[in-house]
Amino acid sequence: MAPLPKRRHSTRRAGLREKINLAVKLGNANVCPKCQKVKLPHRICPNCGFYKL
Image (cartoon, rainbow, N blue to C red; front, top):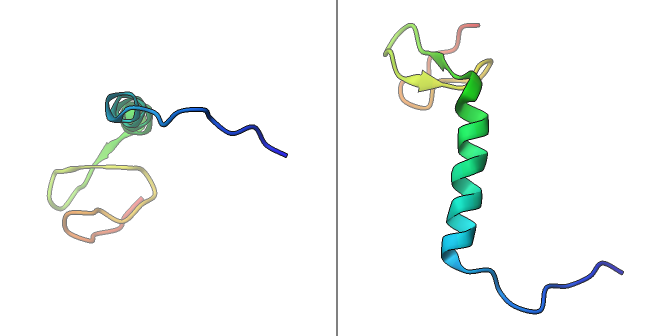
């Protein structure tokens, strides 16, 4: 059985974890050649839907 937390994590703590995960993800971000927005490599652009490696 997995251990369970005694108390709920605060929203601030959860937000900080999200922020760190996003920074790690966007550390190797590319620029979309069509709309010039930041996107993750090998993914469809969330802004315009364009896909090119």
